[in-house]
Length: 543
RNA sequence: GGGCGCGUAGCCUAGUCUGGAUAGGGCACCGGGUUCCUAACCCGGCGGUCGAGGGUUCAAAUCCCUCCGCGCCCGCCA
Image (cartoon, rainbow, N blue to C red; front, side):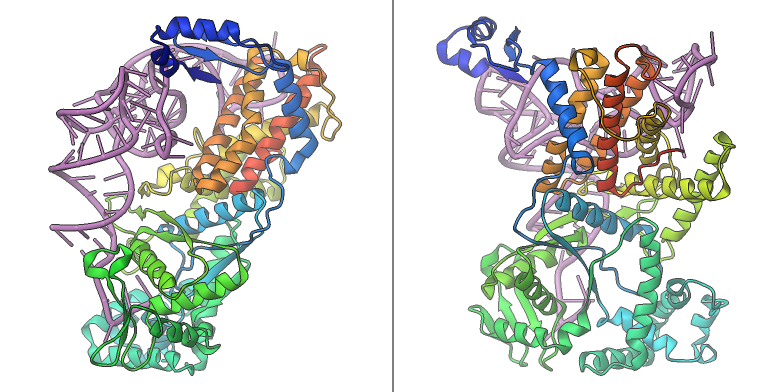
């Protein structure tokens, strides 16, 4: 640790260098801490190396899979993420939400919070209604432009999100040109709002959602709970929220009978302070249903975290205003991320045809990973090759997305997303596999790991230990700040430093240091595995 | 026009909250390394007006102001 002394020096009107000298020599000795050293205008303190090694390895090896995790907290957290409309396959533009949300949930759990993840399924809007509208007709009755565009519909073995979502872009475009068809869609929306949708409405949404979830499962992403928007309507939650909103201090009734909140006092942009939440025909708007949803969250959880794209920023602030209006006990915390754009800069969109399907990206990644494995390993069974290829593919994509701060925009490029080298998931997996291999060959796959700190006094060893010792702080910081990318940065740093150690310092062929070096490798392996666990990147033992 | 976010080498990125010692990585490029625990690796080199300008400070990528560029939003859609 370095302490600058400029301020103190200015206070006593002396030059910083001599003040640093004086402070360093005057500092009383302290157990486990080396005497401070003055360096220019800084006084540097360091933990006595043996003490650092002993305490760090004791902790990492003693706690094992729990290393870096904090004791249980009382406050339960609901993490809502992904919540993509079930209208077709999952595309890469959406996956940032899922990866940030899933990683954050894991980090919060590690920091001690009981976490429940929720996926909010919007089955009430136009988008879901379009799917029901088109699939309620036999394909032979589809309007010609839709049939032509959604060529070869209905291959039964095709994933349902792909099959059912195929006509969606063309249908969406068709409806813009054909008001009479749009009327039919509006009628579907009305039936959903009335609580009596066509029976296939929910089934189609579930079918498509199932396909989307299968894609996410390939990335290790799953959800504890699903909240269907139409259920909030049917069970009266939306009605109760509307009642509360109408009674709110700044509720106003429009001339035509609609209701709004005059939210001028909440710091919203000038043009957005008039928030209509109920139409004249008594149907609710999205923001009102979101109020109902969040009231339901607050009844069960002590915190609510919502992962949202930047296009929902204003909605989030509006929602906060309305929740404050009705005296809700909590406000959600938001993690806002910037979009993933296509290579030429535009937004990734299903309708515009610019979307890259997550399944296609994963398939390509698995193909490339398989080639890499086969190129360097001849001793593996096909099943082992496949398992490694899948883990590498998923790890590469998750790491690639999560490594960047959420508020930076990301431009999608195939070659970068599929990189297995440098600052990547497979790089970290590889370091883990190396550590595993050392332990395996050393016959040291299980504890105990006896060590003698004086055998780990080299610069490589100490540097490595120092990074291992930082892991719990990194997890705590990531949980506190929602900077999930900090864990990815940490994992890469640890792997990088371990690779350096690996090249510089022999382990199994060493003499009296052998047992201690094995213990260090075991501690690094545990820490890498735990960091990868937070990122849901599989810590491979061989690759 | 207003609101929010972003701008760090050819490209990507950490650090910005909480000001402090030569701005840390990666890709690409150049040069090395495999009788030794996995070369998806390691070592060295190349490359920086931290968007621009001003201010505060002993000290600014970091704080404040102005401007420029890019993205998103500004609906009785979701």
